[in-house]
Amino acid sequence: MSQMSDSCERDIVEIDKEIQRRQTDIVNLLLAKNGGELSENEYAEQLRKLQIQIDELNLKKGETLTEQSNVQLIEHRTAAVKELLHTGKILDEFDSVIFKTLVRRIIVLNKKEIELEFECGIKVKQKLD
Image (cartoon, rainbow, N blue to C red; front, side):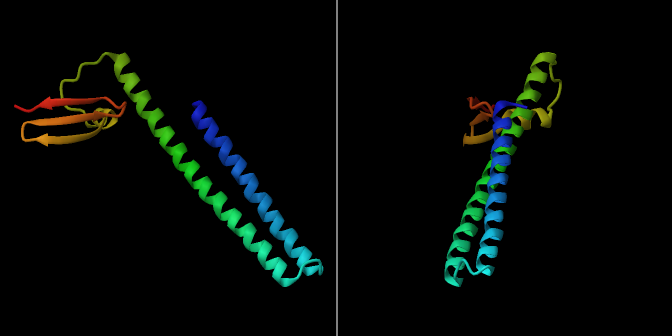
């Protein structure tokens, strides 16, 4: 696993801990209200703030999970390309898996020219016969 992937995993663990703390705060808040330490209005206001914090943490967790998925996809594609390069295998026919691994998109520039954009960021213009 890469450092980036490890970092995402640590972030997710920390976010989960923060969510759990906020949930514990909600339970303590309810106990304080039921014990007469807080008025109904104070309870409602503090509860609303904690729920907003939990929503923000869940949003951050979702973003981090998406980032982690993207990192894992890039790592997978990079490993596939490295393996292909190390084998030195010459392709006799079109291989859709390799093509999808290497090429991000194809842009049609005009009737006689296209541009290939590779996953690594390189762009190559190709004339069509």
